[in-house]
Length: 169
Image 1 (cartoon, rainbow, N blue to C red):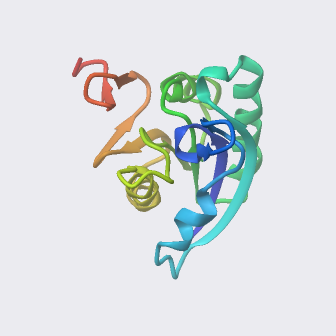
Image 2 (image 1 turned 120 degrees about the horizontal axis):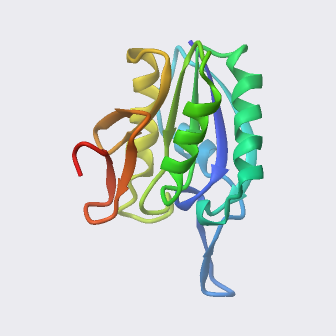
């Protein structure tokens, strides 16, 4: 199976800068995460798009993500997008509205805690997103915390630090 992983930054990629005492999006952690997984029958193409906290994403950034999805959808059986959770639902809705003729599954995922943190959910969420690509139909999805939800109508549940459909809230 051929999967393109598009990385955009977000909490999953944040690293601690000891000199400045802050968390920053300087590089992607996806290669580290993938290196911990056994994926013998996957051909993964990593496409680095940006290193941004999703709160800083603009409409132009979402257009860049859209174009990357369009470019890679012809080369892949599925696409996984690593994205910050704060505006993941905004990007998911954007892609849902802009890709009416999509022919493959696109799965957004991220983490509530950086990969570098001991209690990170990053590895679990990436693993779930990769597995989901084998099991779901065409569309825009989010895979996080043992849940797989299809757009439209997905929102971040800030109280429980996960995602849900509008009908659940």
